[in-house]
Amino acid sequence: MFPTRQKIFLFTSLVLVVMSIAFVLIFSQRSDDGALSQTSIPPAATSTAPADNTQNLKTYRNEEWGFEFRYPVDWEVKENVYGNAVIKFNLVMQPIYMAHFPDPVSIDVLPSDWIEGVHKNFEADGIEPLEVLVDGVKGVKYEHLEEFYYIDYFLPLGDDVIVIGSKKEYENTLNQIIPTFRFLK
Image 1 (cartoon, rainbow, N blue to C red):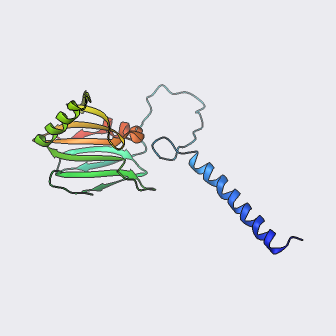
Image 2 (tube, rainbow, N blue to C red):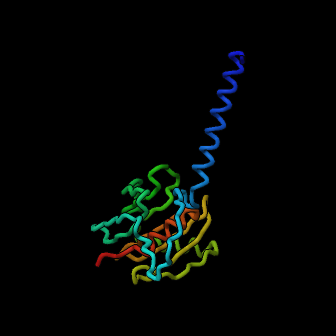
Image 3 (cartoon, helix red, strand yellow):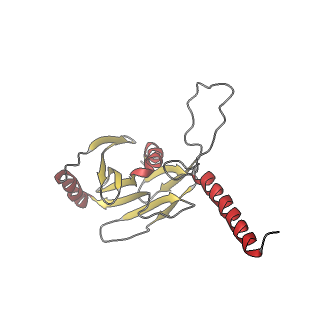
């Protein structure tokens, strides 16, 4: 038989091996935006109908600021998480299972005159805007590097500007939100 020290060592080693295998299996199934990926079984027959990409999305609606969008069901939305003298409204979205800093996806409502300064700073840094159309509204998109690589959409909202932004690693989630973003008329 094994002495007590060897039994403890073997038991501890076995537990560590099992935990390592579980860790690898769990985190190897995560997609690039941090969400758990699902393995899918190919359908028996192919369909010519377009896929419904909104099936696993929830709707956020804000009557006060006049917009809505869809976002992943395994994410949460928090309003007015941070405040300062410039931001009129903000919300952040992040996966339910994990907190992030800075927030993976955010929406801010800011005064137009303040945003003009942001545009000038981007221009001075050589960051070119890309014209975009979101729900029929013309805006611009910037991709820029600060402490993280960001993607920001700037869209007019009355006398203000709405900025929808994300860290680059959450671009897939941002690409689910932008096509579903609607201005309430």
